Length: 111
Length: 115
Image 1 (cartoon, one colour):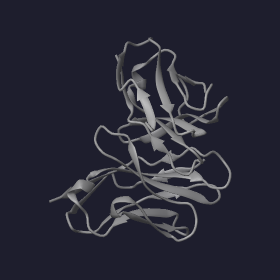
Image 2 (cartoon, rainbow over the protein chains, first blue to last red; image 1 turned 180 degrees about the vertical axis):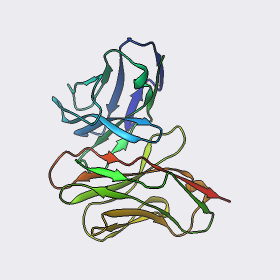
Image 3 (spheres, each protein chain N blue to C red; image 1 turned 30 degrees about the horizontal axis):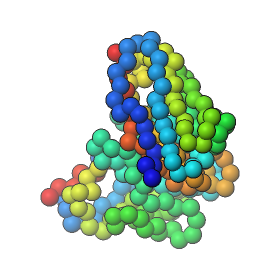
Image 4 (spheres, each protein chain N blue to C red; image 1 turned 90 degrees about the horizontal axis):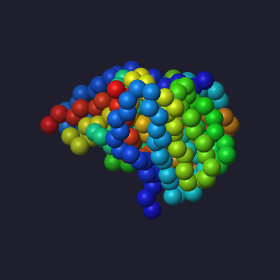
């Protein structure tokens, strides 16, 4: 049982490049979320999913896309990276929404 | 929309003394409340939650939190702090019963326990 797995752990992008942050969970959780963590701002919700095929925008969705084709996977796509997207990204999952398990994070730097 | 306030960026306490990390919230309807801890370069670890029932909730590592509906607060407490408790603590809320089940987090409070 691996929990929530995020890849890569570190990434450096040039402005304008695109990439996908991967998130997979093996707990059959329906609820999955993507957050970004910035100093002094806590964690802010980017996108959210309540099950395969269903996604919703969070607090800071601009510049990010998601899809949920399977229960296990919830990738986050950066369409055209900007320095403002430099952050630590966390994926989380939950069976009922009453407690989330977090991945170990992806540290992204956009230069 | 819901929100969480953690008014202290940092809390300093001596080892062996009691600690309190403050949290107030705003949400429609009944709140579901959570505390998470983050150690350096790690993800968030669940400490405890309040869904319903007893206002005093006990969690991992000797932590507890008290739900106060009239003050819309959910302060984290521990009777005797350890140096190993030094970390970043986050309070989170979501609307209970109905509504989106994603969590809204506070800005975090850094706890520093001095030997």
